[in-house]
Length: 115
Image (cartoon, rainbow, N blue to C red):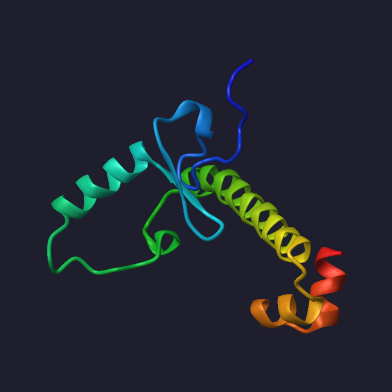
């Protein structure tokens, strides 16, 4: 039996079982391959290149549509991770008031969303 899939890279969607290293952040993950791609992009970026959001680039419809699935999958993973962190907080004795405050919402909203 192989290693279980715990998480996927938030950038390329490869599972931890298909990458050398998967680094976790607050609700997101990045694999060693994507880190290497980032390093290459940063090293080759002109110092005066403007910073614009990816969806603001001049892209053809086909490319925009092809990004919707991966963005949705990343969002789903983040929501699953958030639910797991909330469950962990509850298991450690966290109250719905504490969880709501940490999330910037009311106790009732936190309970309704995660209970």
